[in-house]
Length: 207
Ligand SMILES: Cc1cc2nc3c(=O)[nH]c(=O)nc-3n(C[C@H](O)[C@H](O)[C@H](O)COP(=O)(O)O)c2cc1C
Image (cartoon, rainbow, N blue to C red; front, side, top):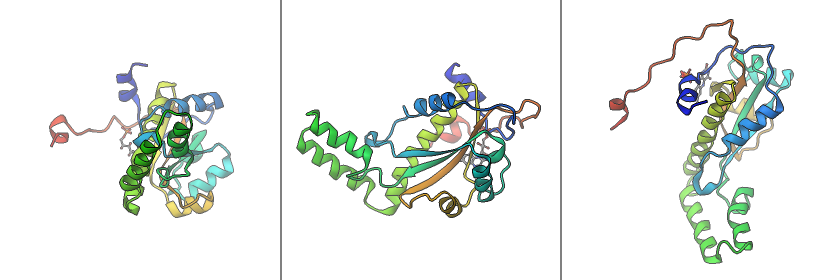
């Protein structure tokens, strides 16, 4: 699809076709495409829990305002934002920096500079840690929605859920914030979506 069409045709789809699945191959393609999203220092502080199982989706629905699309969509992702993704010892950090030193791509003094920089930028306060995690995971989540559209699928982002309830039900460690849930599937063409919603104009956006 043309990028412009992907942007215009992506909608938060409320109704999913119960008869159409999302294959593992499609899901892999969507996640791998979205993984091209940018992130600070390329730290990629995002992960997802994939729910397909009906019971698991029922469990999620109970802590997500009983939103019907959770059980109607074939796949629901719990998007996780890693508040510690900037820390020494985190797999992405290690791969970015430690491995680069080992491979001789990065000097030790450059490594030390990066350690200090990520600590100062992202580790300075709980607020900074959360901002780091969520802004990057947000880019990833947006990319998931666009990649799904491009693959001929539809999606619906949701932050209408009880974060502590989701955390407890799926044993999600404190290290992760949960910015959103994302339902993915095929729009039920027997239903009608509301017309596209208004968007801010250029003038309203530019300060
Ligand atoms: C972070 C985020 C959270 C959202 N949470 C919900 C939700 O819990 N339930 C819901 O029905 N829609 C939710 N939406 C969908 C928005 O209402 C929708 O994207 C917006 O109205 C624009 O419509 P469109 O996506 O069809 O263009 C959410 C969207 C975003 C980006």
